[in-house]
Image (cartoon, rainbow, N blue to C red):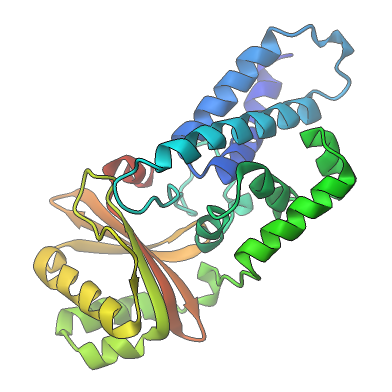
Length: 280
C-alpha cells in the first residue's frame, strides 16, 4: 500500500473514528493503530483497501469508545465531546461529515455499538446489510440496535450554523455586556439546559443547569465575573454557532449553542484546556 493512498485515506478514517469516539486524540490514536496493523498484514488478498481500512477503523473506534466510557465514570463533573472548529483547515478531518455538536452529546446516551450503527445509518447512509458486514453482525441485529438508539435519543432536530443569523451572537454578547436580564431571558428557551465541562482542570458547573432563569443567571454571572475583558470571536463548532473567549491571548472558553425558533435550547460550555487545544 503506497503512502499516497494512506495520506488520502487518513481524513476519512479519522472522521469515522472521531464521530464514534467524540475525542480528537482518541481518533488519531485509532487511525495510527489501524494503519500500523494494516501495514503488517499480507495485503495481496485484500481487494478493496479503502473499505477494509474503514472497517478496521470503525471497529477499533468502537473498542476505544468502550474504554472511554469507563474513564468517564471517574470524570470530574460532566463529560462533553471534544469540539471541532468547522471552519478550520487543519487537524486532518473532513468537516463536511462532522456530526452536529448537540447530536454528539445525545449519542453519549448510547453504548458504543448502538452509536456506531446510528452513525453509519443516519450520517453515512449505510444500509443494514453494509452495517452488518462492517460490524460482523446480522442485519436484523443492526435494525434492532438502530431502533434502540432512536428510542434512547429521540428525534434530534439540530440547527446548524447556516440557519442562525450572524447578528444573534453579536446581540447575545451585547445583552450580556449591558447586563439586561430581561433581554437575555428572552433569548433563551423556557426549557434550556446548560452543560459545562471543566475536566477538573478549570472551574465549571458540576451539574447541568435547567430553565431560562437559572441559565440566564449563570451566563450573566460568569460573564460579569470572568469574561467582561475577554476578546470574543464568533465561529462554528461541529456545524453549530459558537463563541470563543480569549483571556490574555489564550482560549479560555468555548460556548456552543443549539438554537431553535430564534431561542437557545442548549448551551455547552467547554473549559477543559485539553478539549480546547484543537480550537486554537
